Length: 246
Ligand SMILES: Nc1ncnc2c1ncn2[C@@H]1O[C@H](COP(=O)(O)OP(=O)(O)OP(=O)(O)O)[C@@H](O)[C@H]1O
Image 1 (tube, rainbow, N blue to C red):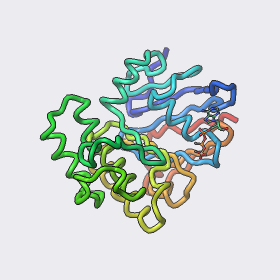
Image 2 (image 1 turned 90 degrees about the horizontal axis):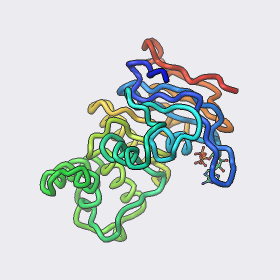
Image 3 (image 1 turned 180 degrees about the vertical axis):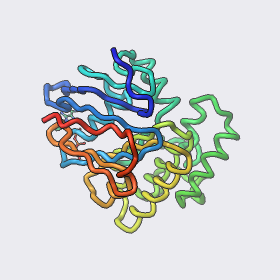
Image 4 (image 1 turned 90 degrees about the vertical axis):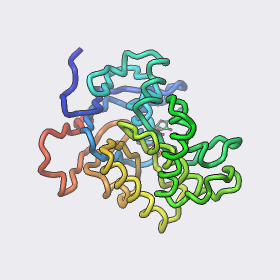
């Protein structure tokens, strides 16, 4: 088993995944994500973007191929180790907001920090800071049911950033937002990621969203079909290209 290149925080080789009902999900994806990079994963509906994020983050077990986080093999980890890795090092944003209805907004945003063992007071301060950056600070004491869908999604984004994850997986994070809101929230997310050195893997089929990334890999039928570097990133050395695995 050969370890991945040093400058890749995430690395996948020949990743295959088949869903429980036998549907093909991934058919030999290889890619590297550099530390601090914002990588967009594009492609049409059903091309495998969510499945790829789930495999890279350890949410779904790798059936064939390899996934490495830094120098740690994720593909050989059991469910408990993968859960710990996700809790301690990764953040996740779903396309639709999922919050705990019994907790108020700040408690929801602070929850992953408290699960990591951070005290309630410190977790609240960190959560509140991110809620304010996402313009939902004044809703801190409300319950999720009292919020609009777009506000709930902002809370989910604050929750994902509050832990300062090493890698943030964002699956169509602005899907529930109006177009006007979308640009602002995305800028907040990408600015926060850049200023805090958070690596982001962002699934999207929206070219405007992908344009905020350093690089885009496109999937089709579970395979990488192309890699696009944006001009600012074009001269960066050592970026592992997505393999042409068709
Ligand atoms: N739980 C599941 N069971 C069976 N097949 C699934 C399941 N989830 C996804 N698939 C199938 O796997 C393929 C890849 O799906 P995936 O959700 O990863 O694509 P996607 O690019 O994220 O799509 P979208 O843009 O619609 O979110 C599709 O053919 C899809 O129908």
